[in-house]
Amino acid sequence: MDVIGHFVDGKPFSGSSGRHGDVFDPATGRRTARVELASAADVAVAVEAAGRAARLWRDVSLARRTAVLFAFRELVHARRDQLAEVITAEHGKVLADAAGEVQRGLEIIEYACGIPSALRGGFSENVSTEVDSYTMRQPLGVVAVISPFNFPAMVPLWFLPIAVGCGNAVVLKPSEKDPGAALLLARWFAEAGLPDGVLNVVNGDAEAVDALLEHPGVKAVSFVGSTPVARYVHQRGAAAGKRVQALGGAKNHMVVLPDADLDLAADAAVNAGFGSAGERCMAISVLVAVEPVADALVARIAERMRRLRTGDGRRGCDMGPLVTAAHAARVRSYVEAGVAAGAVPVVDGRNVEPDGDPNGDPNGFWLGPTLFDHVTPDMSIYTDEIFGPVLGVVRVGSYDEAVELVNANPFGNGTAIFTNDGGAARRYQHEVEVGMVGVNVPIPVPMAYYSFGGWKASLFGDLHAHGEDGVRFFTRGKVVTSRWPDPRHGGVNLGFPTQT
Image 1: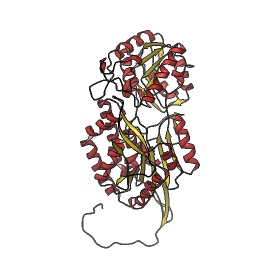
Image 2 (image 1 turned 45 degrees about the vertical axis):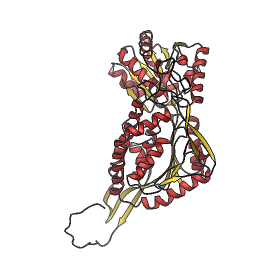
Image 3 (image 1 turned 120 degrees about the vertical axis):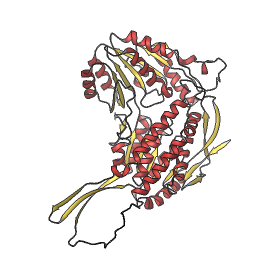
Image 4 (image 1 turned 90 degrees about the horizontal axis):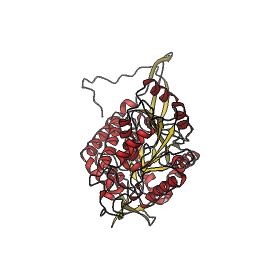
C-alpha cells in the first residue's frame, strides 16, 4: 500500500513521527493509502526550509515571479482532468464537481498572474520642499496555509498563488483525509520553476496545526475549516503574534419570496443543497419559504431530488459519497435527530441505493439527499452545521420574519434571495448581516478578483481570502519619505529598457 509523505525543500520528505493516517476511496470504503502525520520536528524542518527560501524569493523580481505563475497556470490547465480524478478518488465528489473546483482554482491563479498591478504603491511628489513620499507592499516571510478536506485543490489555490506572487514562502498543511491534490500542486509549482523551499507540504493532524501556530518562524496563518477550530486557530495564532485569517463554518439560508420563479428556486435549492454531497461551506442548508409558497416549493424540490442518482463519482452519478465513514455516521445522526424532533422527512436519504443499483458497493460512505419540511429554529438540524446532504425548510409569514431569522443566526457566511422584485432584493442585500449575498444566485462565491469571506462566527480575523484582501493579508505596507539633494545620472544607454 502506498505511503504518502511530505514535500519539503523541493523534494519528497519522510518525517520522523512514525504516525500514519488512512486515506480511503469513499465510494468503496477501501483504504487506498497511508499518509504520514507530521510531528512538530517535521514541521520545523519545513518552516526552516521555507525561511531560507523566503529570504531569496522576496528579492526575485515581479517579472520572474509572474513567469512562474503563468507557467504553473499552464500546467494546471493542461492537467486539470488528472487533478479532478485525484480529488474524486480521495474525496468522493463527482468528477464534474471536481472539475468545477479545479476551474475555480485556476481563476485564482489567473488573478495572481496580475500580481504586479495589485502590488503597485502610491507616489506623492513634493509633499514638502524637495521631499517625496511613496508606499510599497512587502512580503511577510513564511506563511502557513491549513486547508480542509472538502476542497482539496481550490482552497489551497485561494492562498498559494497570491502568497507566492507577493514574495512569501509557504508551508501548506492539507487535510490528511485527501492529501493527493496538494502534493500534485506542489510538484507542479516546482516544475513551473518555483525555487526549492518556496512551497512545502506537510501532512498531519492537530499536532502539525499546533506546531505551525507556535513556530516563531511562521508570520501568518490562513485557515479554512469548522467554526470551533477556526476560533481556536485565530486565538492561538494571534496570541503567538501571528497575522491570522480563519474562515469558519456556515448555515446558509436561501430566502424564497412569493413572487419568485418557483421552478428556478427549486433547481437552485437542489443544486446548492446537494452538490458535493453538501460538504461545502457555501451549501444552502436552510430554505426559508415565505408563505404561501412552501407547499408548492417543497413539492418541486422533492420531485427533483427523487431523480438524483447517488453513487460513485466516476460513473456519471449526480452526487457522490461522504468523505469518511465517521462523517457519514455523523450526518446520519442529524437526520435521525431531525425525525425525533418532529421535522417532516419529505425525502429520506438513509436507505439510498448507491449507483441506483441494489448491487452497488454497500461499503461506501453513503447517504442520499435528504429534505426536511416544518423545521423550527430550535432543532439541531437548524442550529448546527451538518456539512452533508440535508436541506431543511423553515416556513415564515413575511419578508421581515425571514430577515430576522437569517440575522439571528450566529453564522454569516453566505445567503441568497429568490425574487422578481428588484426593490426587495436591494433591501435584502442591504439589511442582511452576511458576508456574501446572492440575488437569484444560490451559491454567491465571488470571482477571484473579489474577496471570499463571511461575517460573525464564519470569520475570525479582518481580511478575507483572495482578491484585494488576499494581497493585503500576505503583505505589509511601508511608507517612505525621501529627499535627494543632488540628482544622479546613470549615463547614456540607447537600448530598449527590459524587465529582468
